Every structure is written in structure tokens, then in C-alpha cells.
Length: 47
Image 1 (tube, rainbow, N blue to C red):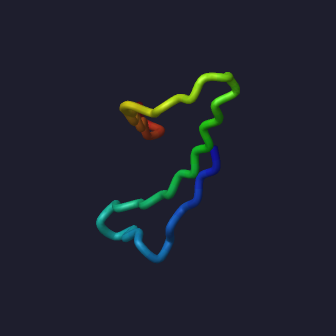
Image 2 (image 1 turned 90 degrees about the vertical axis):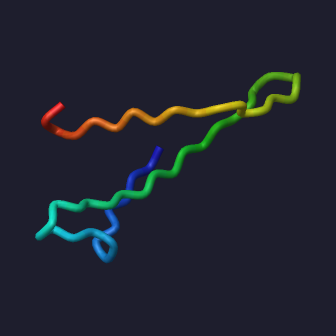
């Protein structure tokens, strides 16, 4: 996973910090796979 802070879309004065995430998923099996759902849990430094 790579993370990139998007300074041009963030607004420090209002506490809005925008990040982009790039995730790579690989199917290493022999049977085709399909991503059915996903869930993101993002936690800041304060928990």
C-alpha cells in the first residue's frame, strides 16, 4: 500500500487533511477470484 498526502485538496485551517491510498490485490491461486466487498477502517493518531 502506498499513501500520498494531497496538499492541494487539504485545508489546514479547517482541519481537513486529504490522503490518497493505492492498494494492490493479487490472486495467487489457480481459481478466478472476485472482490465482493471491502471495508475501510481509518484511525488517526488520536485513536
